[in-house]
Image 1 (cartoon, helix red, strand yellow):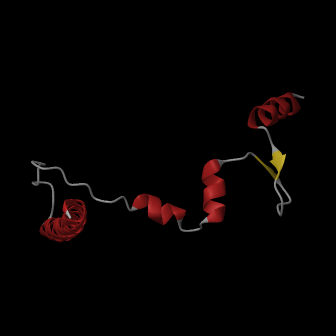
Image 2 (spheres, one colour):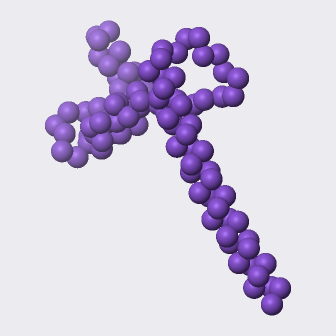
Length: 100
């Protein structure tokens, strides 16, 4: 009797629904649905992009981690320089168009 009362209370609190393709009842879970949609979701969630802050304490980083950050920052500098060149060219073209 206690087991049935517990089950009724628990099942109502979980809003059980029969999912298509499954023969069991389960509570909807966004994490479970993401995992079913993308089986590699956990791998992507564990690999967070490294964020570097200017003046950050580097004593806890290994030499390999520092080298990786240096290469990432160099790639970001190159990307920023390319974006700056494109914006400068656009601005120069606009100013030349409106001057003539």
